Length: 101
Length: 138
Image 1: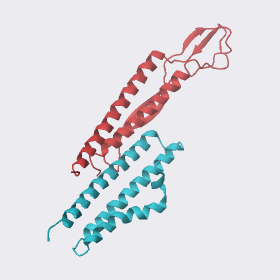
Image 2: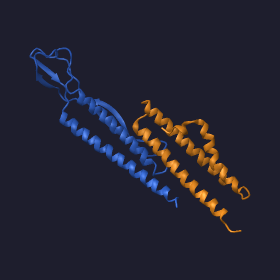
Image 3: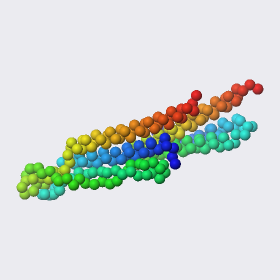
Image 4: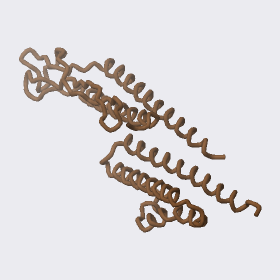
């Protein structure tokens, strides 16, 4: 059990994190990408939340081991994707900031 | 339509679930291999069977497996001479369950193997997805 994720107080924070990144580059027209990132982040949080719920249900004996594993794997996959995308985005911004003017 | 690399996970999960149902039936049969009736000439525990059927999942469009129904084995009961048993008939014979431990063991081994095969499918699909996502890194 990942305790911190199950806390709903952390959810808005997680959703805001990637959304704040594109504001650095607000002068450029990146409104569309901004919202895409936002939805990806929300998707990740949803997936993690779902897996948490299934894990809890599994502990209570209401879900099978297979269901728990499937959901946790789905969450892992989503998190992996999000981290990969985030790394790409961060490195892109770094490239831009390193540009010689 | 779901991603065809994610569907195998769901199908394998259904397969594992079906096999665990089968394992449950086998465990019931083994546990009740000596369960006889209470009254003279009463029928003992009869072996349970389970059958599977394919089922198309509406969400993913993949063909899953599902438990079709549970049944009982119609094989005749084995007679054992045990006059002292409360279930013995007037000749002293007790009807024993039609559970053959050898058959159950073979069945259990098969369920185990099929479960492992499903697990391998799950693992493989996960690895492929993981490797594809990893393309985004570096």
